[in-house]
Image 1 (spheres, rainbow, N blue to C red):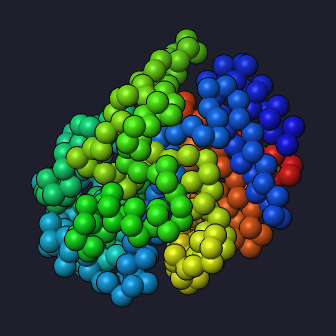
Image 2: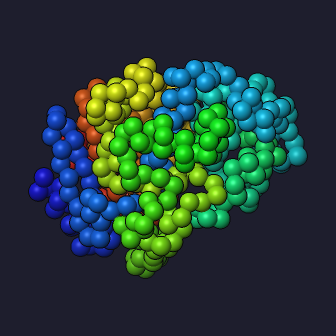
Length: 375
């Protein structure tokens, strides 16, 4: 444990992060270390490492028979019926063709529904998405309510035909709207009742728990000169419930709550008390790669050659010392990472509140992965 503690302390001392808390669980042993302004009890904005939680909520509904993976989503999301697709990704938004088939639940889970962000952010079809739906840096209080958000999305052409290409982020937000409509509940309530409460995740939600905003760490953005600026204080954007609960990256959580979710996955869908929260089959589906070699290559900016399951990446090739084929998880733009290896039960979690400046994982993240992989 001392090596992990020293790693975090060194990175805080050299200014890489204002604080960090990390966990490595292997073979029944759990290591936890914290340094700087983060502790094991801190609340943090977990950003995109909440995407697997959103996918799990969708799969619970599949387990319950609410819908099947290959069902068209337009039954619950009529705004996404009769879609138009730009003729080529480079085409203007007015040059479209009909979608060749409906968008399915599977398309959303695989992030291949035709909506999302490609490596090239200059494509014309992205203009309405970036202009109306993407609010720049995370600002949950500035996003429109779900029905208005989906109607706005439905007016934009798709960038690719369903199933054709992996695109980042937006599918997880659509999943959130799907869960809300299929359950007849606001997403925050549905997620709490169906997933968070059964797992004992008392710190997790789309805002800090009532009366506990003081536990929320500040969010920092790096400046060009190496200094850090607070972009969201404890009483800021995540202190109250937003109009749009983002399934793609809007959750607040804590180290132990993230661990509870990861532990459920490596336990075949079981909570700590032995109850099934997800079926074993659903967990296998989550942690299986669905992307072709070409789709992985086209998404190199985000995935660095790795595959994608439901809500998270899946390591499929050995190209770095920490890479373990079958490792599942993801990283978040607030400087967070959570991964697991289903075959061995290894769980690794790193939480900071320093915003990433791009999709490439920062040095601390890579150092942490090397340590957790034992190299």
